[in-house]
Length: 269
Image (cartoon, rainbow, N blue to C red):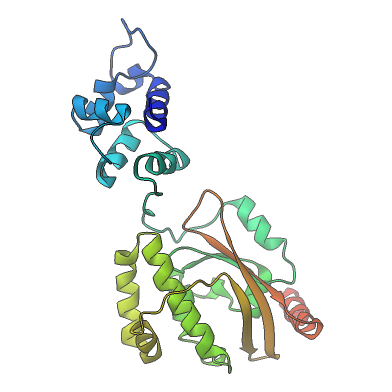
């Protein structure tokens, strides 16, 4: 039996038939039968049997999602199912703009003098620490729909330092690549249309069709109260949540660190 068949058989064996309205008597093996999984997934019993046996070719995304629901798979199990059946992870579900877990927030808060934030695949900022609020933007003062890196980067006048255009091109290229890679390019269209309508600079850069990564580099910001600050940044994937990325900005020099400390201290007073 293939790895896919073994995985499917194991997961259906773990389910209690009575929980789904199936009789639990006269069963030679534990869990759901193949025809019961097929019924829950709204596919034929023959097709599902072939899936476990590795016959019939690669299943469609829609059918795999139905099988995942039929077997009550969690997010990690659903991803594993897609990797086995299609040799790629599933497309990201509708990105959330909600809160992150308390554990993840504590990771952000541990960076006392390094602004840190978490964005989703649509580049909405979903979490940040005190240093980010002091040095970058106080996101708590913005409505959720405005907490978006594209909207902020192309909309804040003081953000346009001498390095602005180069950083802007990197952001646009990375956004195009990430939304396509994560399977949400269709969902991104509304945001792109809004940005093109409100920012000629974004429109020009988007029409260049550049793609690229935005994993690390140096960000220069022109803070209205304390002048230019150089911050080295790195991006980190959040394990188990492929739609989230954490960015940590570290002061590039001792004078930059002193400026960050002054801003964070002033915010605490």
